[in-house]
Length: 70
Image (cartoon, rainbow, N blue to C red):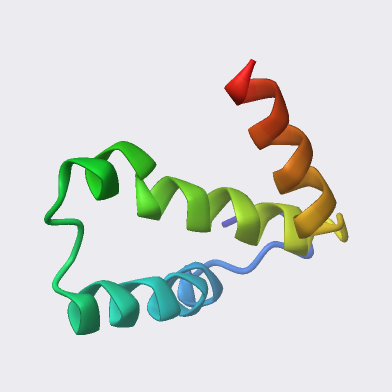
């Protein structure tokens, strides 16, 4: 709240979550065991962070998945 260049509200954060919330409501959420394991919210958050940092979401996602499968 007191740092220059940092907004005092969380509107940007709420707007960035909106597409994921809408998708969850349309699809009925993660009702399967596989969906629960995938942690849709976590994945969307990580992808959003990479995108905001200017990182290539697809290449970083592929690298992450390759490391997880080993």
